[in-house]
Image 1: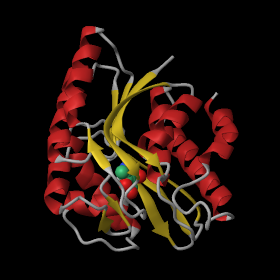
Image 2 (image 1 turned 90 degrees about the vertical axis):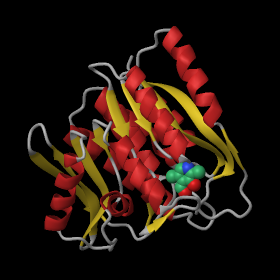
Image 3 (image 1 turned 180 degrees about the vertical axis):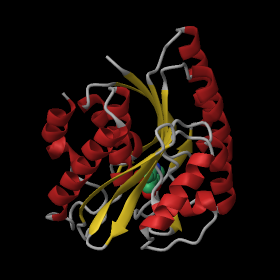
Length: 276
Ligand code: PXL
């Protein structure tokens, strides 16, 4: 069985980061080993008065113990990281645990819809660039792309502009770049570039006019799991996008009660079908 170490926060209510990654990586048939970087009472996208307890000091001792146990990871998947110090520690973790066959999947979680999440600033975004350089695969949304590349955000970029961004991001060092949340008329999808093959891939689905927190984490969890299981980049993108669309469709009917994330749980059976 393949194994992924996933490093991100645990938001106890709100379904994002680890509370999405753990069940979904497991559902894909991959062993999930979490390093929680912080405990929050909820995610930061719409709840007032959330609490945060930083766990930066725990990361290195956990990594040291894992090193003593000689643990091997087929994938390292990082998501929401809360401080420049955490970026550095996670970068050291990658240096210590990346072996020839380890896939390093970095989702440079920083913002959405043109805005940074609460607590992030432009200097953090600049430092995220050094972590992104360590990745085999990165999966930013367009907000994160605009901060990584220092360009203005807009909702509709042309295909040519997206291709240019993919090439610029690949030049930073990661072999595969996947940009999520690309709009094309009434469709929404992802565009990717694999530098080893020098090929562009894209996958678009119908755009649903509802947005939910946590869908980036759903995409990254499924995509990283599919990749460590040996699916191609194109196959992983299709599996992950179709699952996100299904989750959004399923949740949109109950948006008032479930505005804080998607009801991914009830869609797990179709994810399992695609994975095995
Ligand atoms: O889904 C990304 C994410 C992860 N972790 C925390 C968040 C968010 C998005 O708002 O607030 C704590």
